Image (cartoon, rainbow, N blue to C red; front, side, top):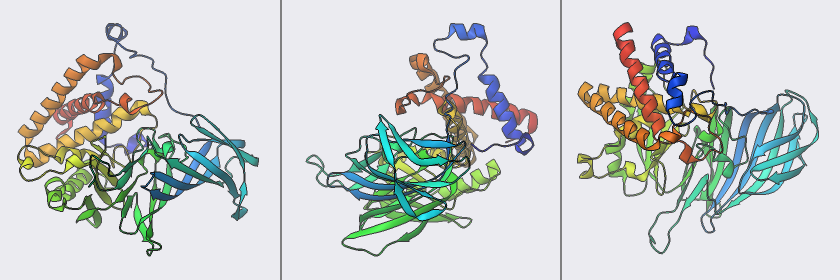
Length: 439
């Protein structure tokens, strides 16, 4: 998480956060009347011995089985002297581990290791001092992944299905497709080298550094994320896609869709540059990443995910001219774009704070609605959000997300989080508007 001093916080943001904290204040008497543990919840911030500086992933994707062959190169620094390293690694076969030190960068020394459940325990060849940088190399494979990475392939029911693959890191699924420290309280830079069939495209975080010449029907794509982010935001999408290209203030904006759907792209993505300009001005901080891409994939179980500079979207984001009369993806596109400030640039340090990520994204998407379509449309959108929240609050009250999240699954992050927080943030906006002027 980025830490800001009070003197650097804009007045509107300070006011909004203050109002939100008031909204969430619950007296002991009120707490006893409500179901669930609302007071004195234990924190879920994860403690760690190492600081991940950089991760380099070398991946080969195979749709036939399907499987992923991988090599992870992790650059680390310990906070205290250590003799072993514990990483998150689930449902993968570890094929070897080596170490390279700052004094011997070109040669890797094999290390002993153990796997226990979802942990990879690496036994170092010596004690590593606090602050001493070293590099681990881990060879691994993931066969028929059930989480983290998904392969879309044809079958007897859909023989014409296009092959593609995508990853999903939130909340803690990155360690199902690469060994890492899989928690949002550690920021690092990243890069991926992904080998796929030569006619496939690969999208990942950051800047495209290179794509190799075809060799034996394969090609390798190299993407590098040079500004730090967290592991759940690392993304790899591969397949055949067409591109809808735009830009804003020198920043490339490219939306990728499956072949044959390019005509539908403007209906969903045409306003993206205007959204980027609006959010940059409203938040007071220029869009912070080197590019913005959004890519529509099949068999995606989420509406969208704000992987850093490379948002993944459900294929239903696209719709034809007839459906466009009744359906709009504008709110989804705006929501995921806002996350590149609230969620990617500034990240919750543990999952008990995910409501802040989602609430600010929901709130600023509503501000865009007001800017683009007027106050009445925005007020109606807020009303629908509130009605949806009250209905779900009544139905799911025992599991409202006010407690620390443990044994985290995607089901733990339900729709109450953005709707409740977004409503509180809208209240804060209205109160601040009356006292300090329009936000």
